[in-house]
Image (cartoon, rainbow, N blue to C red; front, side):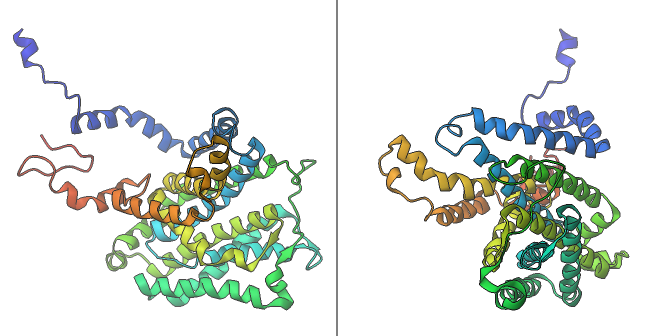
Length: 398
């Protein structure tokens, strides 16, 4: 009995349980870190198979909402915003540079492919190499934007990028001779891959294409984040002066952040132009930049998976589910709710959700551990018995 009494008590809750769970998950985390690319490929394959099956089997998605094909089309379009969020996460989440004109690079990528493969210019360049061309063109404009704004920080940088984001759509709108003005450019070519049809109501080729693009983009983002360049970005985000004092070339590092973030938007622009079959200046206003920034912040700024999942969830709720709630409540015959036009109130609901999220969980849905510690540093100071400090994983030193 004395031996039993001498055994340390097993902690079944609180910080001790969290520490034990973290210790048990260490082998899984080591494998995931050692085989990051394989983990991402397997995860994206699972997601690609799971989503169509989920909406085809689970009610009410298969009863009151659109058919599986329309859901797949929505998933493909949501991938555009996931790409945009991943690119903006490099600029805002990793580098700490506030960019309010991100939709401009999205427009540049879209119009690049529109000029290269449409009846407007009588050109028909193939889609696949134009993905890279659109990314490079957008990256060049990212450098052109970043070069004169390197000395600006915070609100001043935000105002300059906001101005750039307003200028680009206006140029496309008024340069009618070169862009067909407000009419936009239509008839943009679809991808060609063997005999696979990228047209009509067969949305799966575009869906699979987006999954492949997202998989490659997420792998590259993780490689960048864990590289020397990624550490330099995070150092600038934390303290630019201290980063410069420790040998970080802040000029080239910032330019690379703008260029790589813009290239991802250009990639999304080429895909969007081909998927939708046309580009119009009104599709690239400030609302797009604001929505993508909200996706990054709400998803979990600095966390690549968090930003991707958050962007997907927010787009699906805002642009797919809210637009179908009218039909859902009409079929369900629910009083009061069946009389509300949710399409007119979607931005009101979206705004309320933003306010609630910032009040209740400012670090986002899936925050990075470092970002979460920064936002809750003041709260953590009061945890634990008097005279003790909580360690980063929440356990009180023994």
